[in-house]
Length: 463
Image (cartoon, rainbow, N blue to C red; front, side):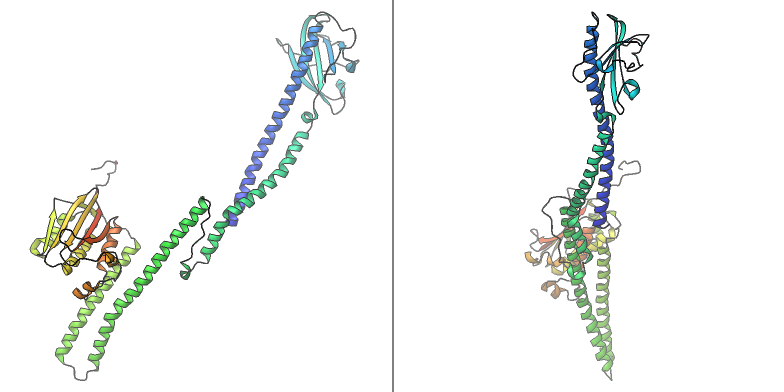
């Protein structure tokens, strides 16, 4: 999804939610304001009605009922007949303000009346509060008082003003959100644009990381880390292709030269032809080994699922290298079974590479130590050779990398055995490193693999 599309969706969504919230808020605010105004007016009128009720308990008004403040309308109405016994000056000769009366067992009532039929100006509404008073100077009466309702209560002025404010507020907030989201997504647009223009020749390019410690900065750092890995992988692939081409070209060129010489000889010697075929067979075997190693590396690089087994490394070394004295210089040191989580064929491949490497460089002795350390199975392969210089202990795991001594002792080697062994170990969550052997004084290769643990059964219990 494009950043501008995200920007539009975020803005639209935010404005929609804001309008819904404002709609609910306007309705609630309008209701609460009206209730507050009416309650305040009701309390004020009720207070004046109470004063009049107390006054008429002992005496009548000699004239119109006096008014005070904003309460200008009073009526004293006889209960039962609705006869107006007394009123304020404004209501002289006017009909009863309201026919509503307090309910049974109640002394107070309030209502709203509108219109000229109750002596009210058109467009004006009155809040009427009544109180039932017994045994007054007028007898049993209802004291009514009324006050004009504020326009904010009886008209749509409040809603109109709140709606007008909302109509101004929503676009402004929408513009702020649009601008803010656009500013926040600007780095994303830059990253997207650079990714669109990315090519194999631009893998050195990196994205600027914003100073803000937010998700955008995290995205930029993650993208840069991905480009680092991609550039490393492409560089490694190019170097691998170059080295593979070089390693394959040499034996192929040699084979071709031998064949051309043999074919150009008008009187070939059968003995020389036999030697030639023997040499070609050796070169073919070397090519086959290189191709097999390349295929194995390709499978390892794809990261395909690997078969995992419970492999006893102590028994494996005993069966493959010690029994029947196939490696008379090799000595095995182990305290018992050491189980590793690895495919058996891959374990044999790694150990064969390590032992073969030790055989090439050892003087007279090879020691293999198999032990358990924490949750790992560890195999150490020591030799008493000349060792590996500290600066070369990582380079020997590079593909096709071979030290001068290795080329001298094994001219037909491809330089892929140790890289394959390390890739296999890493594929199973382990490691393979080279170092100096304190035991024999030569080199030592330390292989670490996860220890095998029984899988849980269907009920979630471990066997």
